[in-house]
Length: 314
Ligand SMILES: NC(=O)c1ccc[n+]([C@@H]2O[C@H](COP(=O)([O-])OP(=O)(O)OC[C@H]3O[C@@H](n4cnc5c(N)ncnc54)[C@H](O)[C@@H]3O)[C@@H](O)[C@H]2O)c1
Image (cartoon, rainbow, N blue to C red):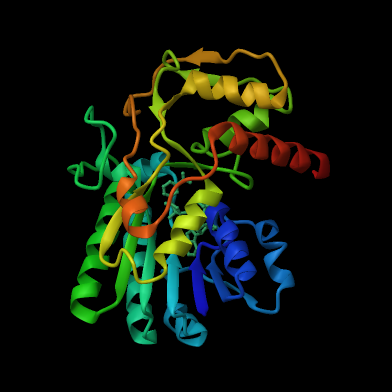
């Protein structure tokens, strides 16, 4: 089928594009390269079923580009992804994440697209002690980024009702894997792997006891592909492993994979950081037939191998 991936030069979008090409689809990637990298698409560009269009999803050329691609399915991953940047500049965050999503939906409607898959986030739930978090949990977005993701979901619902453009929203836990930027604020696996393979210092915040649900990028891609069929229309599914991992445990796992015996430095706890998060993904299992296949030790080993390879070529 013809598919379009917004944000396809980024971390998750490039893995998704590789998988879609491997399955024989015609893939168009739209990305403004604000955070994505052409190198992520080095494999994809070798396929004659692949097309890359450098474009801002909030810009005036979007509708024509989508009309040209005529996608049956759109994977909408393009976003301003940095929570702290969203606090510093909420207008920019809303422009990309809210107006960009509306623009993609408008273009989808005009092009007769069957379904839009939306990259939502665990951040929409906010702090809670009622763990693991299921889709029925109340939402409490505490950052402009989280608000923009939740607002995006509202528009998806509206477009389904008003115009019959189907959607599935997928609320990702903490995604990690090769190609994740080790220099950003998020992506602690990438940050630890980058530092621990190059002799750099590492730090954890507070006592290192904060927990997260780390989910491997290949498993996220698998869920996106499964949700692109008819199942799960009009719904949100949480995507996590159901396993809580503390910052200190994660540090130990990455250090072991890197073959170093290094302890992290301790920095003061950051205000606003969630103490604990873990997702209940049983709905995705029941309705999409999805289950994560990669455990943290295996996934971290892939990231460490990638970090080493990247260091050797740069
Ligand atoms: N990585 C995670 O842990 C995580 C967790 C929850 C949700 N998500 C969501 O998954 C999606 C992909 O995230 P990622 O981690 O791959 O981040 P990423 O930054 O690597 O990918 C996002 C891509 O969108 C592109 N982009 C940004 N603004 C754009 C615009 N205006 N027009 C066109 N392209 C634009 C960037 O250049 C980048 O390539 C995002 O929507 C993000 O919010 C990620």
